[in-house]
Image (cartoon, rainbow, N blue to C red; front, side, top):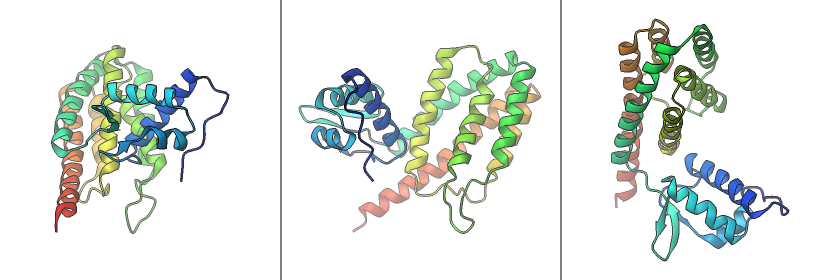
Length: 236
């Protein structure tokens, strides 16, 4: 299904911002797969925008690392490889554990309440909409994001939090590209509960260790799945 056309009376700046947001969402969700050539004419028709705002949007995506500029040949969606995932997760662990330590030190009663509430909302939901095969639950995904944001919310370093959010979005792209999200032999709800409990107990070392293990465990599943998929695609 093609994206909806943009309002014709929007100015170029508004169009560029809107197109950028929609292209970004489509890349992060995996709807635009890694390596896909981003052809200006096709995109202009698909997203209902002219060449100028489309070029501006693509240039911004390239600056964010979500698109790659091809010399004299336009743009393509940035690559996503298992080895790149390892570096991304390492960066995310370093950034978020620093933010979590700060949040644990500065967090007040309201922060504690928000963490408890976010974990409760998350663990009330099923990760899959289908009991027989994994089908991602969009509501769970939203609450999952809110839980991890709540953990860091008391960190009083906005640039660090913004960096953490960017890494979270990039990691989410890899999760979306993986063929499986079922994570067999893993209790994700328990992992979240243990991270929350350690944070609320003000045990920064344990909370940070559990958070790092949580991300690294997901990365192993996703990386292995991407490797299997790539090998299957290259088999004669």
